[in-house]
Length: 326
Image (cartoon, rainbow, N blue to C red):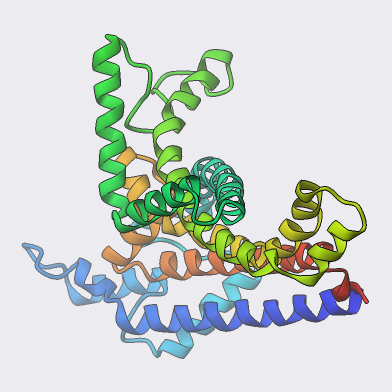
């Protein structure tokens, strides 16, 4: 078991190195930081622009492999370079990743748990009213773009506040300016800001994971091991939960681990709609600004998350399937 996990860890580390290197090289060859200085009136001297880009290690007149070596040397020291605005990439990622974490963890975990429960229940009640309602609801939600769903929830929150006559739910930001974030009132305020964007992620996750879990559960409902468990005296509910659901969760464990990692930069629309300045917004802004170091830093961050997610999914797979441990 230990050898299996060690091999997987080395494999995932190699993938992170390759993916990050490819992302940096693509960003360095396709993005044009020099465009930030073009079109200004009066135009800055070329020598000044070159000096500035050299300082940031983004000068397109320098060979890309030379820039890559400089970036890699800094990475080994724990330095991801500086943004196009001359701010440390480390500090920017360190600030924004906690913003995304507060938003993503609640939405992903709660949404996944509810989605797994809904999918399993729909499979057990196949073609009955509950299953049909869950199926139709899932398809409707999945057919609505995330940005539209976010606008609907935002407008619903505004309408609720107007109906109540006071602000119960907040639609912008993660905390009211001036409040102590760790006081009792600050924590309540954080929760009020968190509800609506989390609901967007939860609803999407329930629809998404519910469909996968339903199909996975249907694959095991007619299995011989379930009939054997029933023949040994287990009640139907015990057999379904202890043996059926556990087996159906095996592919879902891997699926959730990777999707959770990618959600850090995949909740872009939700972050922008509700004013949460997290990793998704940062990645979009970095591409828009032709910020090579920031794009590479975000890619590295996601790569490390995928590595951790892959390792945790292997642990979950081994816990759910005893054959892996042999």
